[in-house]
Amino acid sequence: MGSNSLHVLKGINFDVKEGELVSIMGSSGSGKSTLLNILGMLDEADSGEYILDNVPIKNLNEKIAAKYRNEFLGFIFQSFNLINYKSALDNVSMPLYYKGIKRKERTEKAMHYLEKVGLAEWSHHLPSELSGGQKQRVAIARALASDPKVLLADEPTGALDTKTSYEVMELIQGINDDGKTILVVTHEDDIAHMTKRIVNLKDGLIIDDSPVQQVRASVHV
Amino acid sequence: MFSRDRWDEILEALNANKFRTLLTAFGVFWGITILVLLLALTNGLKNGVTADFGDFATNSMFMWTQGTSKPYKGLPKGRYFNYKVDDIAALKSEIPNLKYVSPRNQLGGYNGANNVVRGTKTGAFEIYGDYPEYIKQQPMDILQGRFISYSDIEAKRKICVIGTGVVKGLYDKDEDVLGTYIKVNGVNFLVVGTFKMSNSQGDGEQDASTIYMPFSTFGQAFNRGDNVGWMAITAIDGVSITTLKQQVFDLMKSRHKVHPDDDRAIGHFDLSEQFERINGLFSILTLVGYFVGALVLMSGIIGISNIMLIVVKERTKEIGVRRALGASPWSIKSQILQESLILTILSGMLGISFAAFVIWIMNTILDNAGPVENFANPSVSMQVVFTALIILVVSGVLAGLIPANSATKMKPVDALRID
Image (cartoon, rainbow over all chains, first blue to last red; front, top):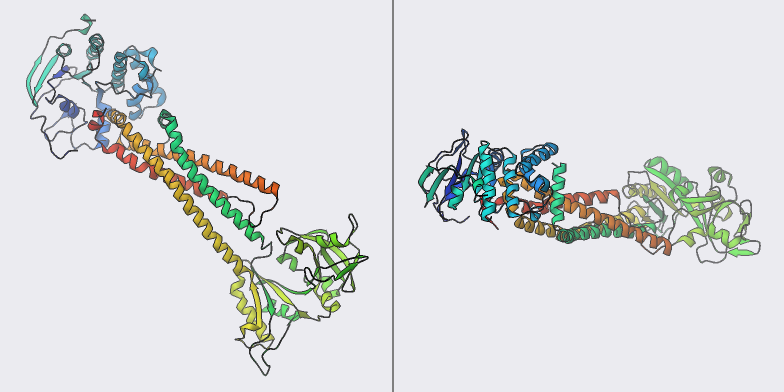
């Protein structure tokens, strides 16, 4: 909205293959969130190209962007961003609603994913009745619900204590084990080491991009 | 567009802050209540005022003679003349658009000297000589017997039809009226029927103290010959008497040797014109009702618009999340639009119902307390209700338009960043 533009990313070039679990690290202001927003089609790059599953993502109007987000992407936020007057189940079925899936099928699918994150019996609770970890697991179920190609997690453990963080990471690792591509933005070293590859950003440039030996979260739990 | 899911969404959103929703809805509720009540009151006033016209066929005029003001064909000015019975036939044949032409004569008057006697009882009544058509111009309910017929006119029968006031004045309770004789100015008349005015208000007593007798009998009995006192002329439906009256005047002038430009020779009262004038007045009052009601409603609408803006602001983040999950801008917009639409329509319907309830109470009180001058039966037609509903729908959309646009104005990424 401001007229003064700020160049946050100054030339980023990297590929993520299907089934990868990548963490993007960097101090605040390094551009990791901007990168994630561009990948999430919430924001658009001034220049450059972004190809997702052989589909060039460009010249998006909001309508198409919404469709792509719904089909290709699942978001996990630091502050969960559940809708507070909807039950866990309704929250999870929301992307399916926007996909245009019928109520019955939607509820079934949403229930399936809630089971997957281990919250089946909490399906009718409001977010305010859930703990932080549970909320994040509902959010993960929601991100998975529309069966997206990529999960984008922005500081998924940023608002959680260590133990809960590891539980959430264990869940994320499990989902990755099933073959889902996941990008995690984090500034916590231990979380980053639970992924398979760390991309390090500084001042809008990639300063390091290397695979790591994955630490299973289950070891810590 | 209105799927069950959408309903759930909207109801959830409205339920999320019940008290605020209620307060917001009250603005529109109140606006539409006032709109409907204003129109109902206008209507009540109109009903009351037009009731004074009675049921008399409104497309009518009355016409009488006055002295001529211009000399013509050797006749001096200041000459008096009378319409004659054969003028009626001439009018009917020359001007086919006239529905009824009733010549009338009158004897006595309201509050005049006693002119009717029956046995030991006397009374002062209005006595008219009339044609059978008159009952079609001035609807009356025949309570007993019949009204005047053409055979009465031809045979010059000495019969009469009397109003309820006459019955009350000349007869004992439960006394048989039909078949009795009353003496009018010394001439006996057989009573063949009684009547009351179909829908009279105000002048009821005068109307009921009236005696009708055949025009021809009247002329003979009271020495009027075939002179006509005045005429009550009604035009056919769809043709205004106001447009026909000049033809009538011209014909009368030529038949009675009156100068064609002598407008003072013929006096008339155009009921239709008066009625139109009053109708025009009430059209304006109705318009004022709509205008004032709409203005009050508008403040309610602005209230809804206002609260929807706040709702959008409050839910900026939620809207951001929804868009991240794949909600298209249109689906967000239509959600906000529908929320405001439903809030408007629901509160509006409640307002209409409440106004209907108030109108019902007013009518009940009016019914119990008896007629009030110039006010009767406040009510609104279904047409008004539908108009009000259309106003509501339009204003609901208008109320939601600005908030709906502002809901999608912010980029999702910015919306998500808000705490």
